[in-house]
Amino acid sequence: MQKFFAVLCLALASCGAPDDDTAATPEWLTVFAQPFVMGSSYSEAGRSTDEQQHVVDFSFNFEMLSVAVTQAEFERLMGYDPTSEPECTGACPVGNITWHEAAAYCNTLSEEDGYYTCYVCTGTAPDVTCEPDTTWALPQHCPGYRLPTEAEWEYSARAGEQAPPNAGRLVTDGQQLLDCESPHAGLDGLAWFCGNSDGRARPVGSSGQNAWGFWDMLGNRLEATSDWYEPFTVAAVTDIGGPAAGILKVYRGGHALGYASGCRESARHPYSPEARFPELGLRPVRSLR
Image 1 (cartoon, one colour):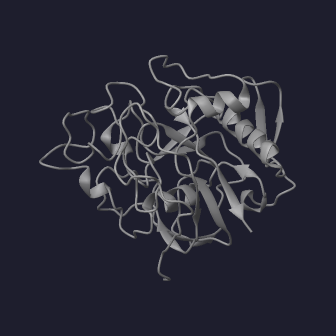
Image 2 (image 1 turned 180 degrees about the horizontal axis):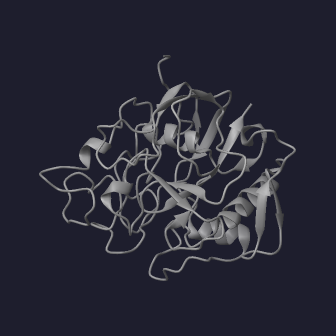
């Protein structure tokens, strides 16, 4: 298997986490994609049976936002902020959005930057309904901004590591995965979860920058992907984008209200595309053809 690597377009000003009331500067980070093993091994603590390991390859490099979309940026572009946490500042990740609103945001961002849109949306936000534009055979073929595939998200979260770089920190000094224990030697400084978040989201870029420069991928908010949910198989795939249809969309990453077991690169969270919960947010990508 080829060696994994990635190039970060712009470095953040500091490698450390900023103060709680400060957000990291959003950057579009370029990822040069290589084959990787997606899913979790049988020995990974907290794994689910739908995370079968399999090799994934990509035809396209892509760029991904270094932080989740903030409340302030969502409101600037869409004209409203659906987040239900008034104590959280505009630097916190937007939440309480449906999958459809996440797709509509990507379309509006594409229009602002002069790209073709990736979704066909009807209705007015927040009651918008979106579906992938069938002009593009695969999500990766669309030149505009879109939601990442599960594979793109997990590859970026792993940051070039074959073994899960952070899963080993989840069980530390006897602490269990299904808890909200605080302090937590494994997750404090790595991810905002129920044990250290005080029950609320925190400003983007305040915890857990990985080796490729992405912040907060294992905590704070769940992030929408383009994929419909189904259990993984062991078959190798290229440019996988999930099944053609389904009932539930997959979200990735842990969140501020969630257990430690969700703070894994391979953890999967199925939700209805119409679901609206505080923990649901987004982080766009764009194919580089």
